[in-house]
Image (cartoon, rainbow over all chains, first blue to last red):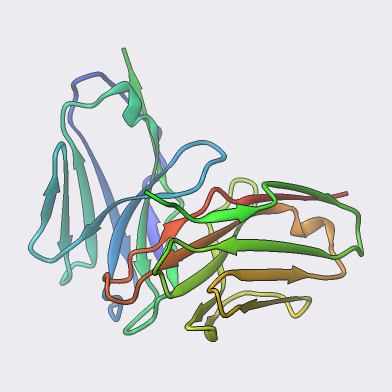
Length: 111
Length: 113
């Protein structure tokens, strides 16, 4: 079983749609949580950190449920430029800076 | 804003050769991380350095070594290259005051023939 699990998709949605990604992690000692996006053959780019209180950045909202070890990302009003692979990332454990990546969920936004 | 710089961007080597990858972190970042991403794989953590000292070690083969220099740049040295070493190698950097957020460079694509 992978330490960070995501639905691989692809999610194929029209422009303007709202789409939600989910992720679960197995290490209860993990303290830091992130969403990265990765375009084909490019580097992962930090989209947002995820906090217990939930956080929002424009069209993007992230939620964390520590009890269920569950992380989500909501994208509202999808744009063509949102097409990418979205990686759920957690740190390995308490005080560790080693990041563990999920396999990513692919999003395709169509006109 | 300045980003992480990696060189070279592409590298082709033959089996059993050596390779050196370089990474220049974002200014004022004190920690450097190396990741390997094979075709169709997730990035896998190799090794990290904080203030020029090795801080964490992952699935880095014994054939690989790395260090961080006084100007905070880092080099990943790879010897006795194997076909399976063909991958994208990313360097990331962070500042310990910023909640572990790691920023990735564009990567070096290594092809071993």
